[in-house]
Image 1 (tube, protein in one colour):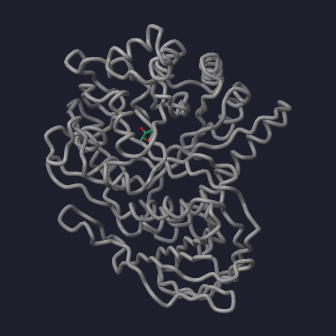
Image 2 (image 1 turned 90 degrees about the horizontal axis):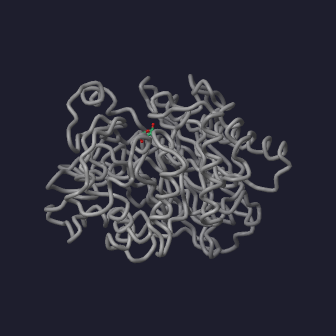
Image 3 (image 1 turned 180 degrees about the vertical axis):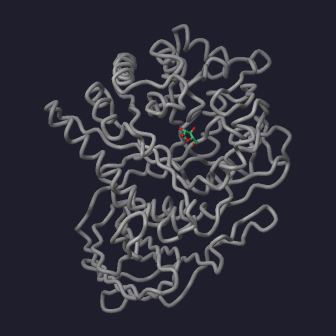
Length: 502
Ligand code: AHR
């Protein structure tokens, strides 16, 4: 099997916003408690944050972490998480049937972000609450002092404002499962009035309005059109979510679902353009894809808690154990965001620790990298700069989830400094290796620095606490640049990062 690719130094798709490598932490399962926060853990610092987890998060250099939900936020009182810990109430979280003693709230989360080398992106409850709680929350976080809420933050020990710039106006408000679910008109009006009030406080905030929870929702994509009719001139981004599953045990079909993500982004880009034109607006609303990942391995196990009445603390929930096949899927998803960098300005892998996450922990025990940690790590490290328009001519396949799916899934990124060119490449073929030939135009002197590769004889192979390096990348040789052409042989079912210096 062969594929030819052409890239030209000046044929750019778009600058890549670093924020597409953002992430998400929800008060859900063990994401916070025994995930990032576990006082008494051997690596915990004076604030109770796990040092082993902080090290793994710092390594992926994720620019923003969305918090505190997710479905959780739609019945959350942010005031429960501030002030002296002994005075904080223990609440029943309706979204995940869990008890939460609120030991971690917004101030602790902001502290953790600083330690982990990231920034907070906060979500507001527009399910059970509304504009008033939202404006108080923003004032508490961002006002320097001299007002009721900002002075309260200072009294609680945080003299400096948190200066949070990214605010989500609710979460998945199109979903009937959401506490306080609304119609598009009800939500659109509330989101717009909330956005207007927050802008009166600070015009520079970046506001994110809820789009669809996934592209199979019955209200999609009319939801986006109606919500943007209400909010177009008062928001900056529209949020989309999508999760992937291989319940059919059909690898080629599963990997084809990344193309569905591409169509989803394309459709919503069209809706944005339609509303912009209709309103004669000069504003460019962009996409915040603030929840995406593989999610299905744990669904059966979770029913015991989600359908019961136990209300546990820090339960094992949504603890998907990712396999090698998921590496290929996550690689394809990230390639899609890079190729759609003109419209997608924020994307959050959901989530970060323990809950459908690249990082796992054991209570009192180790933290380790799941298989999907690696494609996220490499995209975040080497996928910053400019997305190039790589023209691919190669074989395709038809599947139950889409036709004409390329076996070769590729994105190309020129670094911001212009000194590196990186290809992220998935060979989706089940049995055949692929001879890649990429004509490098305008890249005189390009040379291979490193070819990182992930393959495994077993698609179901996983990493565990006992065997954390079962699925891990290796550096391979044989990839060369000859007469301005990059040549490489990519094994079947492989994920590759080919790094060139310019
Ligand atoms: O990330 C898990 C859940 O998925 C989030 O709470 C919700 O927003 C989505 O449905």
